Length: 141
Image 1 (cartoon, rainbow, N blue to C red):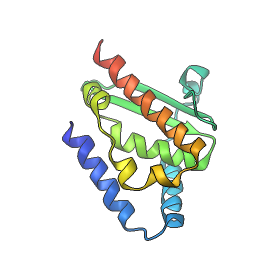
Image 2: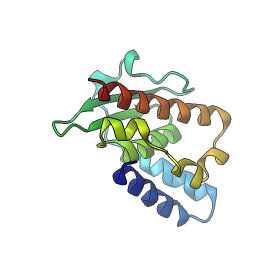
Image 3: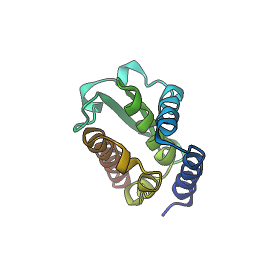
Image 4: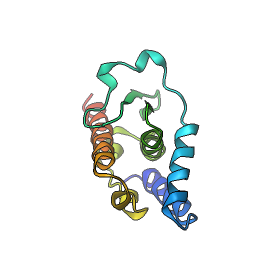
């Protein structure tokens, strides 16, 4: 596993440990969503919509000249936008192989699995799957 992906996850785990309750953690997730760089409007197309999300989430991936996958995303739901911002922080700018093989333990460690509604959990799972699929697709090029 990539030291980069692992260290980013550990950073997020430490960050979330600073918030004593879930209301503050949700507020932090919302803040992360607000800080997410806006995706180019031309990428807000049906092909980039993540299937399985209740809200609309656009995710685009491109290879950087260095051979890393760079993700961009947006969502029409504020919490979902924060969740995709978290995922981008962890996976963007890693190699396709690192993304495809990543073990995203931070989701459980910060308690996200236990505190999201079932529909949001499914949406998050769909995001993870889509990002890993991009990693797989780019690694076979």
